[in-house]
Image (tube, rainbow, N blue to C red; front, side):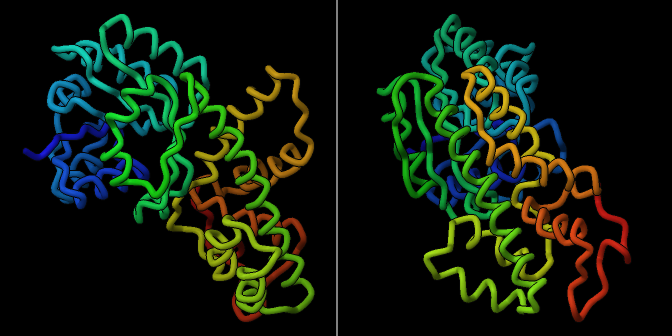
Length: 309
């Protein structure tokens, strides 16, 4: 019998995860308040339901990919939330990057209802999610984590169990700390080469397979090379949400992060310049503008069109 898996939140990440589950042979039911997201799930071969409660009643394992803490609270404990689903023992796998306080509050509510919450953020972009190139950073009930193994394997290349609930989120903060810096370093390197008169394609082709490369250079370097940021796999707006979480977590620990703090300003500048809805790789264009640099061979897109916001 085909196992049914639930999906709450069918945005860039959630739809990619759902698509991989469907291709692996799982039946997928899901909910998202946005009609277009529900239609997207149906087009992929899944079934859209009217509530998180309905999803939890139809599937013993459900993934959640959500935008913020308020949505998590609503999905878990709202009028039609998961805790109101009939039965017990259902597993909700929270994959979002959210403050630990919000996830721990959701854990307490889930446990009081006889249900299980796992903290399992994913490391990877939307483009990586589409090809199953994610790493699951798992924490919480170890037996439940093992029970979800086949579903995890359908959407990711690696699954790491890290221990007690919340450790997955902490590891995601660390991972996004590095992503923030590596992406900024890639943009700065591209600008340096272009200002020196080297074609961006030659910069990318030379460095992508060198000791100087990084996963972010390989993933976002092509967007910087092509000056193409309008089909985002992760937007500056979303990344700013993650940056605030990481900064707050570091502050709680009294941990200074000077390199991270410097890189963070590029994303904030991008937001101020109207790049909030563009891919995070667009901080390369932000640096170009801050340096008064115009690429050869085409007009500066910042001068010929209004940036999306």
